[in-house]
Image 1 (spheres, rainbow, N blue to C red):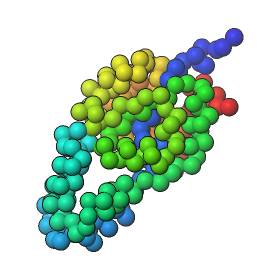
Image 2 (tube, rainbow, N blue to C red):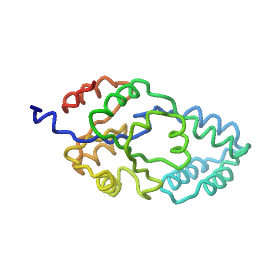
Image 3 (tube, helix red, strand yellow):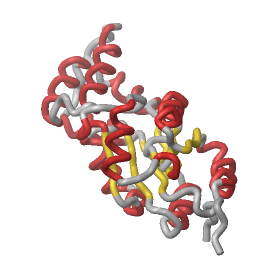
Length: 208
């Protein structure tokens, strides 16, 4: 007969960046900087604001690219910028293995602050995302973590009970917000992946 512990978690929600896949902005920033036609100090702040608007769905793909090329005075084609923009991601092999096993234990969902460009690239290149039943993404939801609204939307769309659902994210503010909402939480660090596997065992999620 299943124990109470084994029945405690009914679903799992995962962030994408630096959880399911790793990312590093450093090389991309260097490549972009080397192709900029100016070195305006304000450009970085303007770029960050533009990126945030894009991730909130306030800009179309075309409008984002047009504005970012102009703000940065990027010396190259749109496709070249997109390649740099998407080239930040790399596999998290240990998580790929874990997710493949966890898929057969509980339903898996995605909750990510991301853009149209990044999601399309990730879905095409990283098979790990195929293990997930559904996802809520900031650019479609028009809201983002750590705001409460996106957690409300995710719980409703996925049909999960927060108290019986584990939420996994690499950013502390997102983890705190999810915990305040009522989720079981884990602050993930890909460098300490073994800690996450141990935590799953503590929740009664026994991997095959």
